[in-house]
Image (cartoon, rainbow, N blue to C red):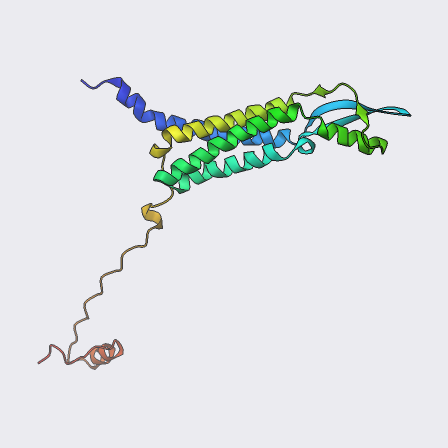
Length: 208
């Protein structure tokens, strides 16, 4: 009797492929959207009073967005390579996802962008800022990085069983067609003689 576990195992790479594509696309989208949102808010204090300041993800740093784009590109590249190259690309995808996650979490506690905004607002270097309020966006960006990381882990685990665009018959050069045998020439028909001469054939061959 055949057992069920092998059948389930055979479906695992296909499920992993679907999940990796979903996690990769969703994770990259979340990170890129989060980069244009406000990550932190505060107030700048100077002689005339206070002024609200805020910093977007792009102000804090462009590393999460850059790594998310790298991760998305490597996810596509997984299907263009095979064997050891696929393992290397999957590893790069995993590292890009992990880097996105860490960079977003570090950005949540970074006040450098707020201090720079405060200095520009007051036209004074070293302007103090008040308490900092961190929004959900840096943590959503970190969640996007976590999805990219999961896509990389799936690629490392099941990528060797995924289909590849390289080496398929569609892209291989077709073999040369066999050269056709010369047409028979009827020495009694002048048009056959002229056609043979046009083809570079000897119309007298085989007529002796």
